[in-house]
Image 1 (tube, rainbow, N blue to C red):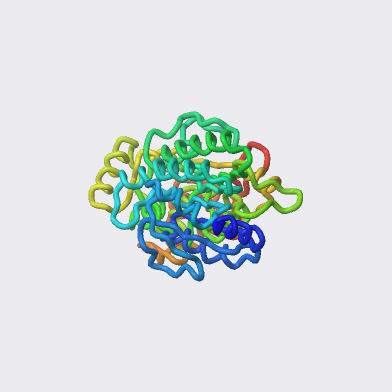
Image 2: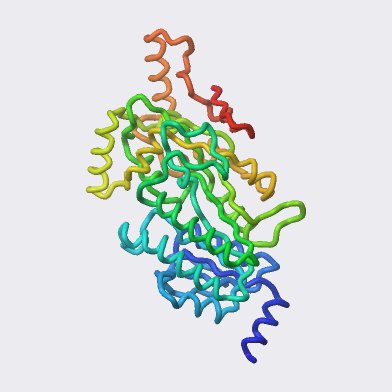
Length: 381
């Protein structure tokens, strides 16, 4: 009887949102933001470790989503909305790659099993990644949400994301009454974001693959929080926030442009040597230069966000170039000032008889590249 009373109270007062991965930076930011929404009654923040940041008025529950206890938490707190952010490529609390994979895959399986048994769950939001498309030499210019990958990821976080999405699709078939939203984020950047890519970009000298200059997309952490909040609520008029959506800032940047804007010199090496460099970097703990990371920095990846704008009704505030600029401002100067590095490249180009002073593909910060709705990418200078 008491349980029925709590459920009636929750239905009257508002949503009860459970957020996994609350000890991480993005999880903490989302927890603090979602609890300010008037339609939210309570927020239950869950993680296996205690957060180092404040969670506002949210109730923190220390729990490992890999264990069956997550089902009890859903029932005890009358949760109706689950936002699963504990799908990530980096460990927390000293865990290694095995711990990360278990949390990503086994943790998601346990969470989905708990959601399937809960009659109160009505909305599920999953944080995924555009890495599910992989990176291959014959990839299309732009991936849409329905484009099959030419080469599925063979390991690391990208493979975890593919497996997670497979389990989510199975859950959606079994519980058609639950609104499921999968958000595939491009590489997330921001002042406090830590990932294998940000660790790579923080190196004093960037190893690159000889003969390749991949196109990259980024999404700002502020936009990540905003779109998660949008997906966690009922859809706005003339929008649909159930389904799978690519989330990325407008435009693309070449890896060479990223290096120049950071003031980082690059060292082009042959592909076999890049693999060796990645192994060496992992050994000393500088960065996780996994095979999928190497493929991204070789072939790049660009996704269409048309469906996100037209169906989900979300437009990022930051372009890819603006997200990268904010990241660069908080990372500090590289070995070479960007102006000096760009000037050196210009002088070399002039000596080689290049037709323009600016190297091909270089884009000034004020004129970012844009990805058009059609399956093509404009890389104008």
